[in-house]
Length: 284
Image (cartoon, rainbow, N blue to C red; front, side):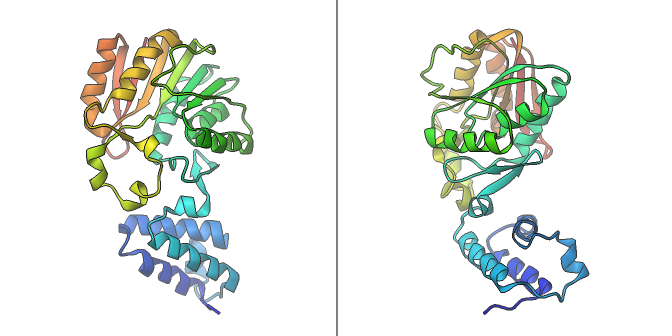
């Protein structure tokens, strides 16, 4: 039997993860485990450090720690991730939603308050962008496209869990030429944008567990998905329709030039909270 007080378990989690993750990530994972597994906020550890923890809860956390030490991301271990104040099911078929993607969604929402836009999300994965937009913009019609049927199965469950209606489409954006649901007011995409050569610089918990189909693009053509989506968006957007991207920080200038060359107006590259070129906008 494993008998721990709150403080002992809290400290043990930290010592087990310190060699694997940066300090800020250790703190975030520990906070998440306490909130999701012990069902108590972190501050209670400091208020009641000597309270004992149920052995079943302790054993569950210890098993989770074993998986984390193997590199499995905590969101996959828990089977869920938080995004835009909602809970999303996640597994190895979909990317884990990132804070940078929340910034993109906030930008779209702030530009469309009071509107009821018709939206297409390309490469929806877990459905986090499409579902958040359907949740926070009133009377929207949202379609979400992905090449992966397994990803769409996750997205459909997330739409149901978060009580929104999404029109899901299984297709390959590189091959599809017509979309009967068009035209749209907004097209948004967080497509694969990490070059294969960047793989060696990434953490193992990303490269070994998250779906490569949603992450990587060839070194030879890093803007492949952006250019394809932008070209098709010219035909799929209504006049004055908006295109939004989450982008590779290394290609802000190139993405802007590509959008302008294709014919988009008012093109803007926006930085994320860390000061990196992370979002792009254009109007047709």
